[in-house]
Amino acid sequence: MSARVIKAADVEMTHRGGPPGIARVGRAISPDLSPSMAAGFAEFDGCEVEWTVLYDEIVYVIEGEFRLGTKDGELTAQAGDVMWIPEGTSLVYRGTKARIFYTVHPGNWKDRLAE
Image 1 (cartoon, one colour):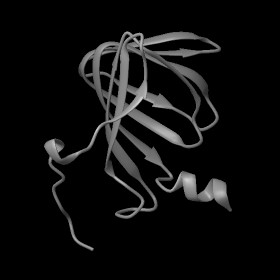
Image 2 (image 1 turned 90 degrees about the vertical axis):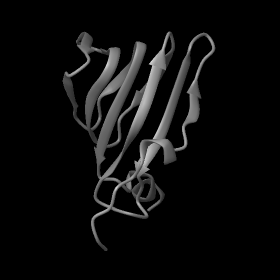
Image 3 (image 1 turned 180 degrees about the vertical axis):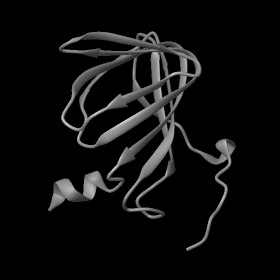
Image 4 (image 1 turned 135 degrees about the vertical axis):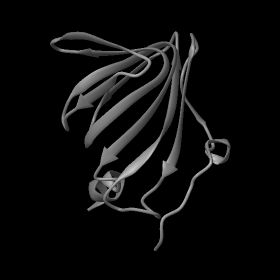
C-alpha cells in the first residue's frame, strides 16, 4: 500500500440526523484502507446526535461552532480548535454550521464489535 490523496469532493456524505437541522458524515479513510485508523468529514447544523464512542476520536473544527455534550457539561470548539474524545464517552454531538474532520482509532471498530 502506498500514500494517496483522497479528494474531499469524492467523500460521500450520509445523513445521520435531523430534522430538525441536519447531520451528515462521510468517511475518507475506511477500514479497507487502514484497519488501525479511520477518518472523514462531518457536518452538524441545528441537530443533535447521541452516541457512546467505541473508539478514541480526535475532531478538528474546519468551520462553524461544534459542541459536545457530556456528563461533565458542554464543550464548545470553533474553527481551528481540536477536541479529544476518549473511548467510552457518552455524548451528544451538536453544531451550528459546523464542518469537522475526525479521526478514530481503531478504524475497524465495527468489525471488532462483531467478534
